[in-house]
Length: 305
Image (cartoon, rainbow, N blue to C red):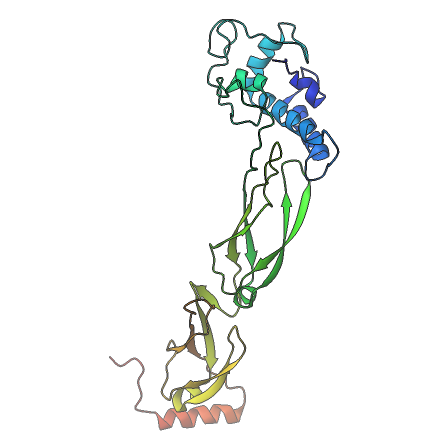
């Protein structure tokens, strides 16, 4: 197998700091990312950059690699592992360092850090599906009710930015996931890209509180509407509807609007909570009206019992 000079792959000196290595990796990964660079050889270059970063970003891997490189090996030279190599024997201790097998990296990397997990006949160019991306997005309650579209901005490891327009199905609830096929990490060796999994959150709404598919709205009413009964307009996610207030209603009474919550195979309801608002008397006539009301209900004691 060929020796890999990981410092040369990233264009940094062997004495480079961790910060310098990270900066070099981000710059090169952004340049050669398969989603942005379609030139021949760009994917191989991207894989080599990732492999070098994987080896040098971890202090233990880097220390072991530097020990080996000090033996005079150079990029492209034929590399013959010393006795006991890769198993913690001899001067080179690479035993079980958490390497990743399965075709992402070269035989050289696997022999150092992967404990020889790849078979000799397995090819580096083996097709491998890209990893899925998981993210969270928020939408407003009205869009969750009607359905619609929202924009999602993704920043990948290389720093490149993607803007996607995501369709929000009507009736979606918090915690549900939207899957966008092929919008995850790029595959390796010609393999398919992974998927993008978006977990939905719904922002707080000034008018409604959401619980499952049920929405709750607090409706202010006047004392005379509560006492005498009335028909008043009430907002719902589908528009205003007329609601009958039964005579003698009290604050906190709950009225149900069937099927006026989030849509679904079993649509949710809307719960309307009544809240009596008492006007403040500001004129002599208004104060006199309250005095007459007091006299008319002199026997009423709200604290009795």
